[in-house]
Length: 135
Image (cartoon, rainbow, N blue to C red):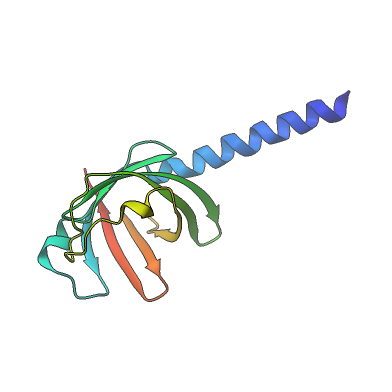
């Protein structure tokens, strides 16, 4: 009898700890810089982590709603995302919205600054944006 109770308590603790870690991501993050040359439109990018499982964001042209899960690792966060809604507009580079992309999983990596005011959002190992927490 103790084993199932211990298992349930440990699972609950694991879920609570995971949720607590993701609280650092909550809030609105606005584009600050990138390691790539971007069209001006892309500089209006933002991410709004509305909850521990939902993001509303824009690349400066298209607005999307994304479901996500975040795993805290020693140096940052692994994000698994799934785009669930899009306004259908072209992206900030002018590429048309790909409706078939809805529901597909994507993987990203995030590093927060020590003061948790800046976020380095890696789209790939060679491309990242830096976002600043909006006050």
